[in-house]
Amino acid sequence: CALPIWSFDLVVAAGGLLVLSLPLLVVCVLVRLDSDGPVFFRQTRVGRDGRLFEVIKFRTMVRNAHAMRHELVAHNEADGPLFKIRNDPRITRVGRFLRKASIDELPQLWNVLRGEMSLVGPRPALPDEAALWSEELRDRLRVQPGITGMWQVSGRSNTSFDEYSRLDLYYVDNWSLLTDLTILSKTLPVVLLQRGAS
Image (cartoon, rainbow, N blue to C red; front, side, top):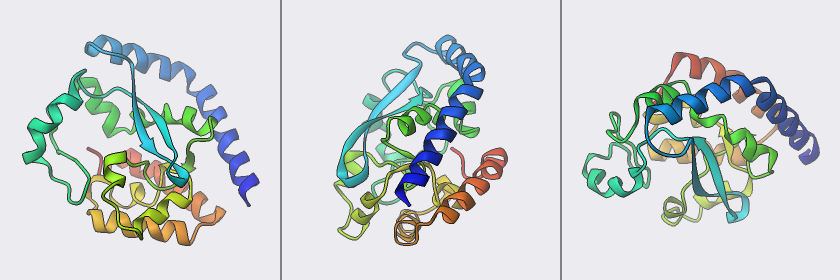
């Protein structure tokens, strides 16, 4: 089953980048004009079997966002090792829109083409998050991380860490092509209705 889903990911990712090339170019210009800093945000994440890779997104925060994180720890609204603030002051004007519409995630189609991610799978975690996982939760590393997944179509930012963990492990243990297609079909309405977006 690995070859068909890999081929499906490759075709959809390549087609998506081709079809969206002009809109993505417009977003690049908007991000660059809105605030000082690079167009793309690159960050090390944990992939399949614990391999590290560099995830690519449109930059949605100010240049020194990571340095500001320690100042905002007391405002963290997520549980577990996750870090979320509903009205994060580091997010730029254009970045807020990109996040609400999930447009900031689209450059990850390049990660799919590079074989580092799938269209569907568990959220790619930060190394410091993964360091706090239980042995059971590390089972999520048996599959490629995804641009979308069960967590994203089940509430995203509104989902607790325990629920996020349960959904990821359920996906890993019950993967099928039909499951992936079902999640993909649910992703568009979730994005359009902006459920759980932050």
